Image (cartoon, rainbow, N blue to C red; front, side, top):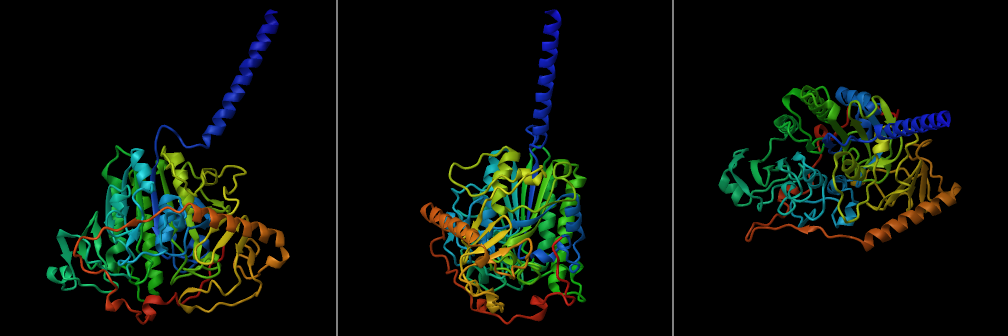
Length: 511
């Protein structure tokens, strides 16, 4: 009996060790509970899939982004929530499709609505979890209270409140220390001066510079971001850096104004420089092993390249909504890894809640946890059986399939870009693995896939329409001058310097 008891005890001990080891192995891929990671989200404006070296481009040169991809994870099938500005930013920051929140695809200085402050943003969630938070760059979710970044969870804000081709709203509050440029007087600004491409810079809720010197924006955003990273080591931080570039009108600093290159190339290379500066600041601060950096774009290229994808900004073909994306976290995200599963910007909100100890809102969001994808867990798969967008004429991505519940030609490219029609079938279906450029409509050959994805689209539309929440009304001061479009905001002739692609045509190829 003594020996039997010993063997039994030994067996129990061995089993306990094995269970503990298995538990440890499972937990090793989960975010740590002890230390909350810092988070940096870099959101570029109008950068296309084919604008970066890690997707095969040789022009422009993007060594910092390529290094970030080599040290982190490249996502080949990462989608945003809208093919244009405001809708895309709404989806990123809230984890919700922008239509669910009653938001418009694009807001303007004469828009009356903005993101409702009752919606929970990443910044709200992370600040409640103990983070210090900052937004540096382009906001574009409402330029008046109660829709400014400081109404949406950010401790501080410095940047341009909307796209750089817009104009100032005379209702915006002017700071006592405002810097006026271009020979403007304070009296002229107060009396309602407005001009296309002349936009203000905000500090929190006040205009501190007008009009902004757009050639300095990328550099100044970078400097402000680095200052924020270096400010305080006692708290984890969340930095949201939505760059103004490479949205038109394109502008670069003197250091990047190379007359031998197209302006779009210079602008992309300056954004690449900015990414390198941010990564360097994180490394020099000694916090790289506890900092997640996410790099992506708000929509496809307007001026640059979305190749090898079809179409560009404004389209729900992949060239408009499938973005160049890298995630970097040394020691946690496997270096040199590639994720080919479908993921989306709406997924960052629930994923950050998991890894940062944040609490998700009680109301419904649309994003899913992609932590298993980010950490390269074996057999990890996309959490989206069908990723549905109802932007424009709508689309569905499911596995390798991309479905459009409409015939070619309905979703025509913006600004009258010519479109080659390759099929007259009433719906479209493409195999994005064998046909990344979406050139061969195979809907007739796969009626069962068409039925399944049409059903997914219809179900999504019905659910969103039944559960739409409201955007907020912007509060305008009584007697404020109208924010209507200035005469100079009428359609302008486009110049070669401002719109042309690189002289050297170097189509990107997916790796």
